[in-house]
Image 1: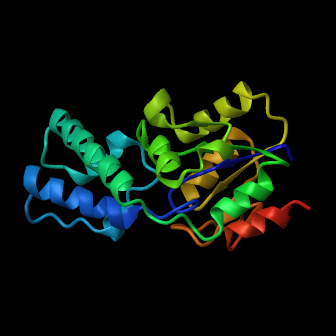
Image 2 (image 1 turned 135 degrees about the vertical axis):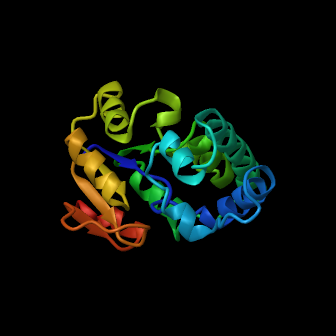
Length: 206
């Protein structure tokens, strides 16, 4: 193995409490004052492409308004995450310190443009990662973005670490082994590897 590609939400941190609060205020003001928005609702949208999230959350709005509302949610989300960043999962920086001398590290997440940058700025962990990609950057789904990172950096033996069935499916479509973070948001029946905490990565491939 020469490299590790990470998901973000449910794998490196859980931003849902901060994001749900920011989205709730915006949605109640701009769309529906009675709409439910909490951690559970938000987690149900993770892994989807942004147009699908907009359709699911704002079914009464026109497609144009759906897109506008989601853009507004993203703007307040980024501000909230930088103002009150969530804690990364335990020992993340220590794990990256141990992994980075041995493997090249990357991030591919199904998120909007700017979100990975916010994660890296909020956590101060940007120096550990070689590159990152998301649908907001490319317009392509996760499998294509994983493949693009592999192609761009000429990776010969990469693995992907994620926490949902969508992560697993995308990883398999890209032709990589999948490491399931079972502490995250989802479940996967037959991953190639499983970790119960991030520190497990430091010995998983010994």
